[in-house]
Each structure stands twice: as C-alpha cells, then as structure tokens.
Amino acid sequence: RGHAMYARMLSLDGKPDEAIAHLESARATLTGDASPVLQRLIELQILQEDLETARAPLEDLKDRYPDSGPTYHASAQLALADGDLDAAVGLLERWNSVNENLIALRMLGSAELQRGNGEAALAAADRSLELADQGSYRTRPALCLRGQALLMTGQAGTALPVLVQAQRSTGAYPRGCKEALAAALYETGRDPQARAVLEPLLAEEPPGRVAVMLFVTREGERNPDRARALLEGRVAAFPEDAGAHAHLVRLDQRAGDSEAALARARKAAEAYPE
Image (tube, rainbow, N blue to C red; front, side, top):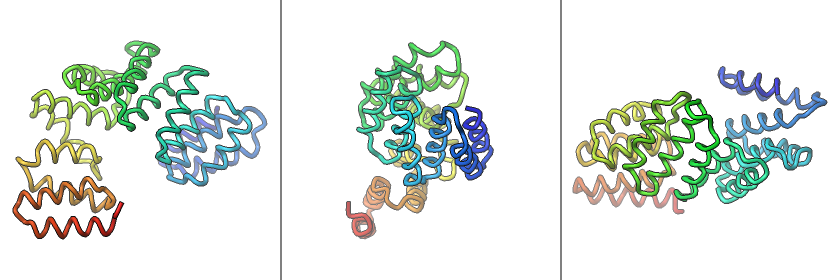
C-alpha cells in the first residue's frame, strides 16, 4: 500500500506521469499483494484518459485477484469511464454483496444518478449514512449524494437542508454538491442565495455543464447576453454538446433572428448528426 500511497501523493502534487512510472516499476518488482498498486495504476491511467492502456493492468488484476475490492473498484471505474453505466452498476452491486462498503455505495449512488435513477441513488446514499461515522469527513459525500438524489426525485424542499448540512460538514465539497445546492435554492424560491452559490462555479475555467445550464434556464431571460456568452464558451470547449447548441438556437429565436437560429441548427446537425 505504500507504493499506492506515494503515487497518490505524486498525483496530487501535479506529477501524474511520475506517479504512473513509479507504479509500473513497483508492479514489475513487487512480490507481495500487488492489488493496491494495480488499482491505483488503473485509476491514474483513467484520470489521464488513457483508457486503452488501463485495460492490460485491469486484466492482470482480474486474473490474480478475481473477487477482491481493488478488482471490483477498478473494473467499475473503467466501466464508468467507458460510459457503460449498466455494467458499472452491476459491478458495484456485486461488490456490495461481497463486502458492503462506503466507496462502493457512493460509486453506486453516483452511477444511479447518472442513469437518472433517483430512488436507487437515494437508497445508496441512505445506506452510506448508516455506515458512516456521524460527524466525520465520511458523512459529507453521503449527504451530497442524498441531496442530489432528493433533488432528482422532485423533493427540493427536503434536499435543501441536507445540502446545507453537507456544506457545513468536514471534507471536500465537490462541484456536484454545490450545483445541487444552487438548484435546490432556485427550486425553493431563494434566487439571491442561489446566485451566490452559482457565481463561483461559473467563474471556473471552463465552468461545468450543469452550472452553465442552470444559469441559462434560471437567469437566461433576465440576462440573455451572459447566457449567450456562457453557451458560446461551452460549445467552443465542447462542440459536441447538443444541449448547448439547442439553447443557443432558442436564444436566436427569442431574439427574433430566425435565420441565425436555422443556420446554427443546420451547422450543428451537419457536424454532429447523432
């Protein structure tokens, strides 16, 4: 585990290539349990978006440690990176059936959110909270997940105090939790507070998709110029984002420029027919 921990510190220090090289070297010489090294190596390769390279150590991990936590963890991480949410959920459910744990539950809840299955995400979040030490840094991710799941299931009023509690808890406060807090504030009619949460997210470079779309849908009519600027930035950075293109078309239509709307829609359809 020392090798995996050292590689994590290198990665956090902005040296992912050095971390990967260290793990590759340890993998070749290690005589004991190599599963933590392999799992960390795969994780870093995924973070570097080198999915094909990650497949070989994953096969090694599966062969040597077929039912281990690191194998389930790495397999689910790669499935998520591949966009195969069904496979990821299946792996995480099996991992939990073998050894129920907070990492698997949180990953499962997050995958269910991505699948649009709020009820399943809520169940995973609630179970995470049951297992976590109350008041510790472990509760914040579970609270964030619960708040997001409640929001997805149309329970913004119940989600809001959960997300506020998460904000006041110890540990990292991820972007997704901030976005959910802003959305819950909007949903419950607290627009000024929502803007205060949303503004720092929009100041990121580039801002996340959820933050941009939240501004466009909630503030676009009040501030169409800024909505347009955010969407233009979005399609410049992510030209395959069909939703951003669609919102720009609607802004053109709302401005009475049907020719610009038609031209934009035609260009997007030609570039990204699917």
